[in-house]
Every structure is written in C-alpha cells, then in structure tokens.
Length: 234
Image (cartoon, rainbow, N blue to C red; front, side, top):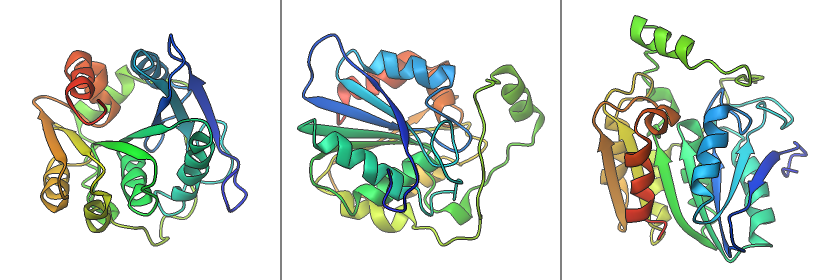
C-alpha cells in the first residue's frame, strides 16, 4: 500500500536458490507485470536473483490512476519498504517512465540500493518525442499486441520530477543506462544527456537497431541480458 493509500500489486519470482538479493522491475506506461514480455523477462532474470515485478498505479492489478511519473514514486517506495524488510541487496530495473520513476525515487531513498538500470529513460517528461504514429511503429504495436496491456490514466498536468535533475544524486549507486538508437518514443539523446549528468560509477549502452524500452529485450535478448552480467548488478 502506497502512502496515499493506493494499492500496489506485484509478483515475486523466486530463483533456484534462496537469494539475499532482489531485482525490482518497473514497467513503463501501458505495460504490466501480467504481460507476456515482462513475465518472460522476470523468469530470465530470476536465474541470478529473486525478481519482483510491479504494477504502477493505474496498471494491471494495482489501484488508482496513472499520473505519468508524478505520483508513482509512492508506489515504488512501498515496494522498496517491503523488499527492504526481506532482502539485504536490492537493485532496480526500470523501463521508460518506470525508469524515470526509479531514478527520481532512488535519488531520495538511496539506502540499501545496489544498482539502478534505466532503459529508454526520458531526461524529462515534457521533452519526450513520442513519435509513435508512424507506419513502422504502428505495425510493431499490432505485431506485439498483448491483451493484458492497458492503463487507467489520471491527470496529465501534475508536476513531475526531472530525471536529469535527480540522476547525479544516485552516486555512489552504480547506474546503467540502456537505449536503442531506433527508439521512436524517447530518442536516445535522453540517455546520453542522463549519462553526461550522472556521477560515477555509470555506464551507457546504446544498442544498434534497438527500439523502445522492453522492445530492446524482445528483439535483442542476449545483448540485453549480457549487460547485467557485465554491468552494475554483479
């Protein structure tokens, strides 16, 4: 339960052993822990740690209405509190606006966080290009449609924190920024700006041909998963 009484739903994937660490997955707008792509990703990553995949408010089985990163930090705070009572090591993997929420939230609540991975993270909400209504993007949406996609949107005009203003405060927590150079929603310049603003330790991975957010994992699973073995989660 978030501090504003919104119910937050998540699913916990246990690894093959009893792990002391957990990876929290934060899907982006319109996505859910229930979709096939996030179920598959969670199972893949549960080989090395427990994985907790959450639904932000307005998505899946969580309550409330989605506020496009304005209030979703309270949802992640609730999940972090739950995980902190059970695990000694916590890392976060966020996608798109889920990544934006992860960056801004962890910049305030750094205790116990081992690493942050931000995929297709916008530097600021108002600067998102959102060029999804081109023929290529429309065809991709049709081909990858999942009946469990969806969102209950709330007000769009609420003030939102800018990841670009928050990311430097993540240090000394390692941050890995992943972006596709064919992202039609959030241009890869966003991750480049975030990388420039972030303090060490940091790493930037631009994947050639990669699309937006979880689409990178869908099309380039080996390269995506390898980033965790070589990156900040070890």
